[in-house]
Length: 141
Ligand SMILES: Nc1ncnc2c1ncn2[C@@H]1O[C@H](COP(=O)(O)OP(=O)(O)O)[C@@H](O)[C@H]1O
Ligand SMILES: [Mg+2]
Image 1 (spheres, rainbow, N blue to C red):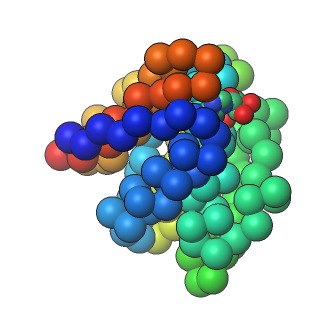
Image 2: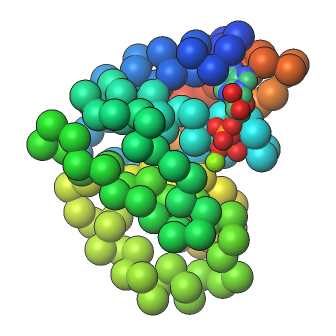
């Protein structure tokens, strides 16, 4: 497990850059943390790290998933906040995304815990002040 301290949104994006180097094709990366913790900001940092345009990153709250194609990599960005049941995820074929070579980032994985029993990576963002955050990175087998 690794821990990072962020003092502002820019720091969080820098930490995302560092963590991006530990990720590989097909990874499933859970993003845990309260509303406003910086989960979407973290994904902006990831897209920038991979050579994409971070301003294209918007919260997929209503679409469940957004896809970004950056320099030969595919990034899937999920937000499960609004789902009513795991059925909705099976309906969009969520397993296809998980088995693909794209890297999946998932906000609010707590909404569908039963899907994440296999190996994955987990980022936890904890608010420690107005703009300060503790960011943990774990690899779960
Ligand atoms: N250290 C920080 N890291 C990330 N975001 C921060 C930080 N400090 C303040 N913020 C602000 O918190 C908000 C985080 O929003 P967002 O990334 O959408 O959160 P989430 O997706 O976790 O709900 C943004 O308005 C951002 O500017
Ligand atoms: Mg978000």
